[in-house]
Image 1 (tube, rainbow, N blue to C red):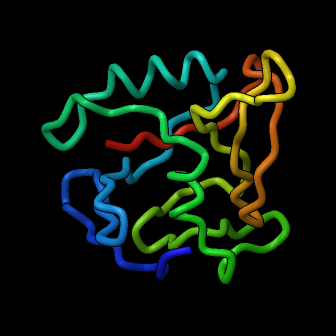
Image 2 (cartoon, one colour):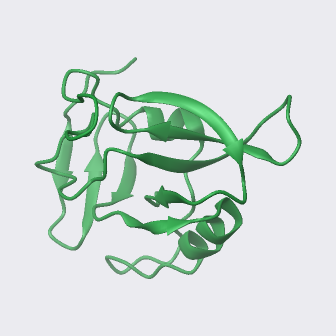
Length: 128
């Protein structure tokens, strides 16, 4: 696990993580199915970039800060850089290897991960 908190607010709705060199959508997208989340990210035009995508499970885990989350009100993420993050599940693009039709997501109230039907409604945060 890398050091947490090496973020830069780019002032254009994006945040750069200097540990991973990933650029994140600062504001969360709404809840949607995983296929719709993939489409949403691929169609996003933010900060002058159009090469957005839904993150993998490993990439999404890289912004989890387990020191910050609590049961239902405070997300396990640095809310200075990611204000308005819901403490609820966020989709990754990672599909389940064991259950057809399921995808992995991070639950941001405690930073845990689990899988559910890709047709279920979860939040989205895009990466590039």
